[in-house]
Image (cartoon, rainbow over all chains, first blue to last red):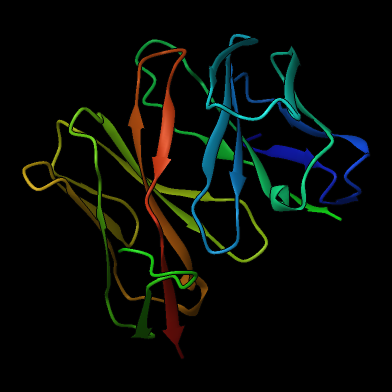
Length: 115
Length: 114
């Protein structure tokens, strides 16, 4: 199984709503990632979890709150978002072991629209 | 390629021709490079990778070339097919175990004309 799954596929939320994005992988990978991708732009790294601990936060606003409940799951909690946060949110995972090259597998993404 | 405003650079090729997509990377400390293909509405899909101690790697119909002197990466696709139409991103990996991060290039759209 080389699949990373993400739910929901699409999400529309108001600026006062609280919602969560979910990501799951069953490849035994120990690193998981959140990226944000705007239209016609490359993915931009937001967070990295390694062995269920947050190892990189790319100065992301606190209205985005990541959570890694276990090695297979990654959540992104959203609160008080702005319309400019509308984007495709991608989850990825990688082995992150000794000798691992860092190849990341991506999910299909959640298309988020903030109204 | 470099993005110009909101427009991705586009490479148009005829079906059956070879395609070459170029990428300039920024960090001389990067030790690993990946090419991803992204189709509309989907996440990036791994195509091929190369370590910094190599200058060429071949896969099925694809070849990646790395020139560390000028910090340049290219992806060659042989006998391009309509299913190859997508946006292609190069990515460079920086960091060690536990702190690896990919930085993506700006992307090139490949259009294959039947």
